[in-house]
Length: 430
Picture 1 (cartoon, helix red, strand yellow):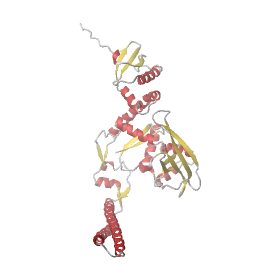
Picture 2: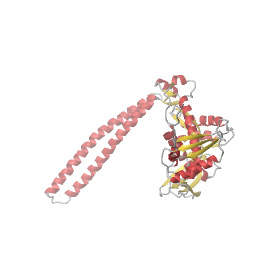
Picture 3: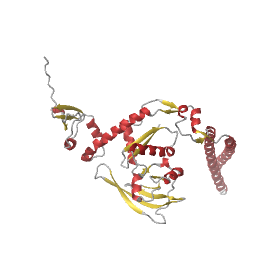
Picture 4: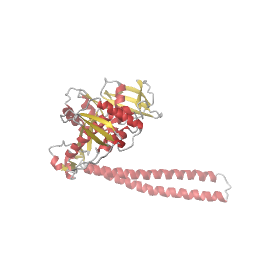
């Protein structure tokens, strides 16, 4: 089961779909974008820029993106090999990105040098080669690929180097909201999906099985070749040592013993060479046989028919989609409520945990005709400093004159209380 998520550049989830791996991301991408536009009611002419990881890389994808003036793509240039730095042509610019660590004033500087150029082999695309250095001095070199020729290079670098915000959100959604839970084990056989999925040709099962066998045999043959090369090197070293000792007579008894051991080792190496050669030759014949077989089998077959023949099924995503909508809504409500606390507390190490403890606290309601006072009773002992922060957040919240949504116009007042304030009295009933 796969989930295709679309986040804002700030890392907030906007839209998602649940599917499987019948199609890879390069095939799903354009349909997901189209349905996202419809759902978000974005006009077709509105230009959208998509920042995606390496899974989207492909010449066919960029051809479609280049043909659509309302779509831009920023991704990593897959397979880029690090080059000498700085390049001969000279740098295009330098920049520094500062990120807060444990609090808003605890800043770390990340230094970037970049070379903005046309991508070699395709001048319609833009390649930005970046050398990035973190605060510890560790340097990496990567290349960014985009069809957007007008956007500032610095903005493109910031956008793609901020994709970790989305990854962090996935982790948080999984840990605290269960976004990876299956929810339902309902299935749909692929036989029933004939009319609803777009079929395509893929590598046939027979050819794939032969290719797997070929990889396994080549791997075993490579290990034998390595052993053989190592044995040949040892035999050569033995031969050199034997000649050195024989060239310096007279030989002592210890020298003769040493020569005997070297000759024995040399003989073993030569015998092993013959055995390994036989095994290597056997694997070569097997590879030739598999190559001959691969020429006679069908190279491709229908992906849909392949799934049907293998009795594969697709997990029914309907129930999971509903639950995931609720999970994402809960996540967004939590983050919106957290914002003022996060700013006032200014401690990024545990602000989420402290606020979560607060949201899970019990409370006592004081109900009057014109207001309801919510006395929050924390489950844990907050420090005096943290209590002051929470009280300040509640004061700011109460300043908005919250009203109970029951058409009674009663004010809703939040207050941080203490268990010592709670008094329980018993009243005798007549």
